Amino acid sequence: MPEAIRQSDDTPAPVGRRERKKAATRQAIADAALRLFLERGYDDVGIREIADAADVSTTTLFKHFPVKEALVFDQESDLESGLLAAVRERAPGRSIPDALREHALRHRRAGAGSDPRFTAFLELVNSTPALRDYHQAMWLRHTAALAQVITEESGRPAGDPACTALAHFALEAPHAARAHDDPQEVITRAFDLLDSGWRNLTRDGNDRTGPV
Image (cartoon, rainbow, N blue to C red; front, side, top):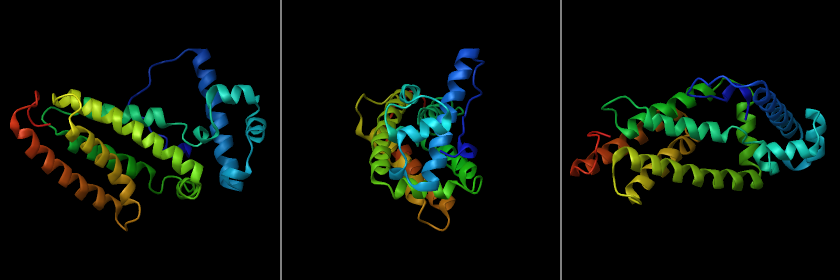
């Protein structure tokens, strides 16, 4: 993912020299891979070329990225952490859908127009079947993780399909908005619907935190 749109919601804790070196190596590999993919296309770039461009061995590359597709989505764990934190650390009285809306809009503002490679990055993913499939698999994983946190924060029963549905549509809204002229408006209105439905659902008293 382009460096300018790599975002973190939390200030990272200080890390040691070894960890910084590992992070720098990982970043160098991901940057080299994305540059080559954008220049020549995903399928026309080999792992050896990426390793050479990053000045590492293929063994080192695979220690950081077990499969080629992961090179494109190098920040997914950080993005998921930020997503879950948006729910866990929301202000008192703020609903879960409203917190997720603000998170989605913040990332939309951070990405839109901040890096000239952002559009090219999206086109790369959308035009490459292997990347689309890999992204979909990650999408499902994020849904499960987010649904679990929603369940915990709302106090609803384990496995409640409403929590899974909210997680799914909260993640889908920014993706669906890409095709519209005003993505921010689409995201806002989508979360209006989610917030209204969630508040109606949670009036039954099953939530430990009141309005969620």
